[in-house]
Length: 103
Image (tube, rainbow, N blue to C red; front, side, top):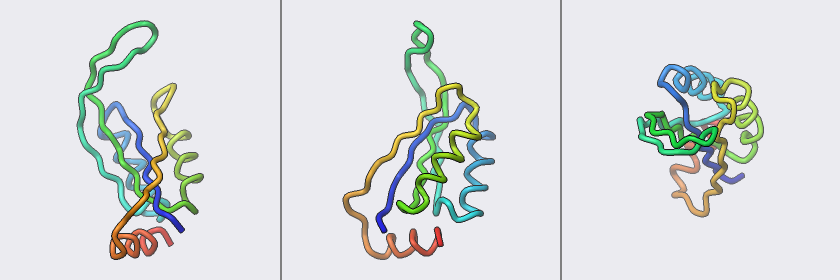
């Protein structure tokens, strides 16, 4: 089993907090880091400057498909960001915790 990080952005803390708590409670994600960020992006031929919340979902490969599905089903955006980052290296004690937290 390998660790995986999934990232996404959300418009407000309420929308990410609800899904984050559900995913951790159901052991689909071991942890979700949530940070307020400023985003500059193109949307419908306009440049947008907005505040968003960046979510970093930490899980294992066995849970990544269901995690992505849950994000897509519950995300408030028309086009949600769902980006998978494969982890090349992780310390053993953290990996053990990830495995334990997603079983």
